[in-house]
Image (cartoon, rainbow, N blue to C red):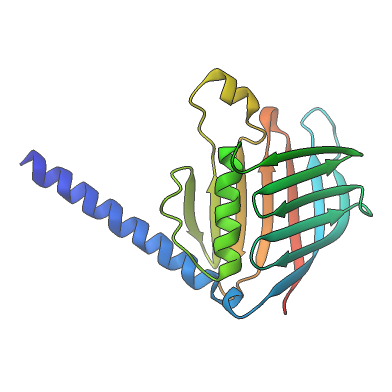
Length: 193
């Protein structure tokens, strides 16, 4: 009886994962034929200790196979993914990391490469959840740390990516930080080339 219950649970989990992966495949199908995507970006930087958010604008550029660049505030702030290399520039300071040395960015890279490819198997990422909310597909990367040292090195408590499943357009990227701080990128005028 215990085996039957266990097998039933595993079967249901597999079906749920298959359904999520199918939703993802359908949501990003338009990327299969595009080589470059662009959008207008509105970036909101929220700090819990500050009354008003800082809002700036810029551009998003995505190219196959693994180039994603969000450039805002006339080039003063940037988020760049080139393959497994990540560069963040904020307030004139640059931070660099790789997906090899940072598991959170490994999932981020895998998700974006799957988006740019027009689909892919995301079930291998244990720190990724996919939820359908109306016409949106919400992908949330929540890192898990094995030690206190790893916990301190985590830059973001979660990364939340929203895709419009009707148009395949990337709608937003929210980078949640410690203490209620976050950076939110809203994308508009999304075009496929």
